[in-house]
Each structure stands twice: as C-alpha cells, then as structure tokens.
Image (cartoon, rainbow, N blue to C red; front, top):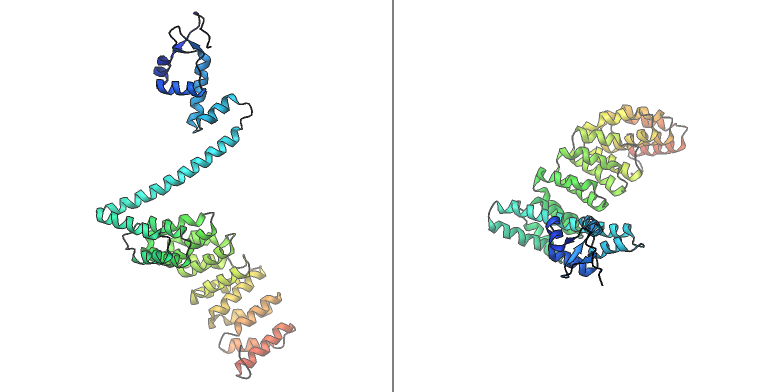
Length: 372
C-alpha cells in the first residue's frame, strides 16, 4: 500500500503537476499504470500525490522522451542497471535515419507535384501516372514510360528514378530523357558525383556526358582520381565530351596519374580535342616523369597531328626505353619526311625493340609485306 504522506511534506496533486508541466492528467495516469512514474503518496481521498523526487524523475522521463526513446527504453534506462544506453541510441538513430529518408522522398515528390501543379491538375495527374509507370516491375513498361516522358516532367523525379533504376536499358532511356532538359539537369546530377555508390557516380557522369554542360567540368575532373576505376575512366570520357580549355587542361594534368586503363581513357578523350590538344601534349613531353611523357606520346599517336612530328622525333632520344618506343609508335602513324627520317634513324638504334619496330614501320611505309 502506498504510504500516507506526513503532513509537513510538500506534495502536489496530479492536476497541479499537469498544470505546471503542460502534460495532461491522462498522460500522468498512463505513466503511473506503466510503472514509469508512480507517485510516492496518496491523499486521504486517494488522489495521487507527487513529491520533489517524483518531479525530478518526470524531468528525466521528458528529457529521454525528447530524444525519441520509447517509454519501455526510458523505463529501462531509469531502473535497469544493465541497460545498454548506446544500443538504445543506435537503434533510435537507425529509426530516425529511416524516417528522414522517407521524409526526403516525400519532399522530392511534393516538389515535383508543385512544379507540375503550376500547369493545372491535369498535368499533376499525368505526372503521377507517369511516375507510377516508371516504377512498374516490368522493365519494358519503364522503357516506354521514359520514352513518353514529356519535357515538363519534373527533373528531380527523373533523376531520382534514374539513380534507382536496376535495368541498363531503362537507365539509358532515362539518360536520354534527362539530357533533353539540357543544362537544367546539371545541378541535380552533380549531387550524385559524391555518392557513396559507385554506380550512382558512374550513372551521373554518363548522363552529364550527354547533357554536355561545360559548367560541370570542375566537378567531373575531380572524379579522375575516383577509387573506382570505371568511374575514373568515365570521368575522362565525359571531359572529352564536354570539351573546352578546362577539360583539356584537366586531362593533360591527369597524364601519368592512373593505371593503364585510365590512361587509355585519357588518351582517347584527348584525341577528341583534335589539333587543340597538340600544344599541351607536346609541352608534357618535357615532364620529368617518364610516365607522363609516355602517356603524352600515346595520346599524340591517337591524335595523329603531322605538326607534332618533330617534337615526337626528339623523344626518340629519351633516356627511358618505354618512352622511346612510344615515340616511335606515334611516328609510325604520321605522314611526311620528318616522321619517315626519324623512323629510318631509329632502325639503327641500339635498343632491339626500337630497332625491330622501326624496321617494320619502314617496311609498311614502302608497301612491302603485311600491314598491322
């Protein structure tokens, strides 16, 4: 039985506690029934009476409740000495993160509907119907929906669907649909370049290559050092598609900084710049890094600019064997006397590999024997 309080002790009835704290009497009764906050006394009329200790416990309950902990966890935290507070917080963090994700998705959909609603409710209904088709379990239905999507379809919705799309054919169709929106798609796509998901980064780069907005160059260039090789290679490809001095500079600066696959992608991207890439690539031949010099020569070989024959011929005297071989290979694709004479001189090289390749190139130029 709850003890009767001594008359000299200060007590508060449940109604007074409710009035002062802003809680309802019903809530305080509920806490009592759960054993979470049992009043320490009862009046002669059997009213609940709370002392200072009860109020301190109520304050603790409210603090823990404000963190989002369940009433069961709060009771355990206050009464169970073995209660694992860290585990409870971790579980609550997971719940909050899940709820935030749901709220962000809802916010995106609401914004998309707001854009559509500016044109009227018919357009809103069309957007809702299209979105549902783009989420259809049948990939063929999703492809058709992406093809049918008008340019008035909210971009945020299309980009979110693109990033979540598992089917390659649907992704490519959505990419084409998004690219039709032009530069307005760039900010939405750039956000995904910092995604933890390599596939999302790859998809964003691929779509940016189709959009062709030069304002994306700096962010795309950062992905040249991406830990995922496929993403770094796609960044090189995208810079080649974007064009411009900034993209050219970023590609030249990347020479010698990656593996063979990335350097092949960089060289191929540089070749898209045509003669504009000749001067910076020739300048790269003066680099103290043999890898940079060799990769620059590989890019010059793809470029095939006859104006670069003389500096490439000069690289035949490079101290590094791989660089000399790359220079000779680049000369093999160039017309003119400068290239021919340099190849003829290399045929007397002390380097067996260079000598063999030079002889083969001279034979090919003379039109004798198989070409390859």
